[in-house]
Amino acid sequence: MVETVRTMAVLAATRDPRFTCVTVGELAGLVIEVSVLGPLKACEPSEVTVGRDGLMIEGAGKRGLLLPQVAVERGWEREEFLSATCDKAGLPRSAWRTGARVFRFEAFHFGEDEG
Image 1: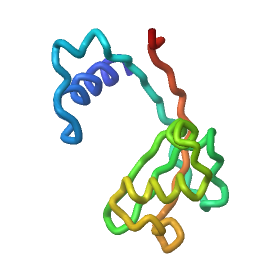
Image 2 (image 1 turned 135 degrees about the horizontal axis):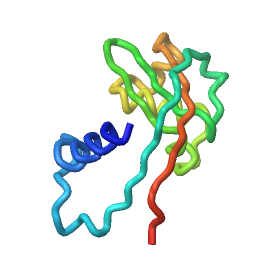
Image 3 (image 1 turned 60 degrees about the vertical axis):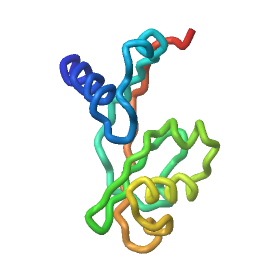
């Protein structure tokens, strides 16, 4: 797992198309966080517990994933979390109601202290 985390951290910093590459000047200010995901479990939307579960939603050949802490940090209730995960997948925000597959997972989240 150590090798995988190291490799993925480098790729996230240098090759994630959503962001510009991390510069040498930014390195000192980075805070590293890691989430180790548990197994995906197919579920009904009503089974999702905000604060415990992360979500992956899949439909129309697309999928999106949000970690458990995202809903907590943004103050979302269950339906907002489901809709935002659909949005992340590039699906209509209501896709979780109309046939997209919903999966939940738990994650072990840890990171450096900020400060």
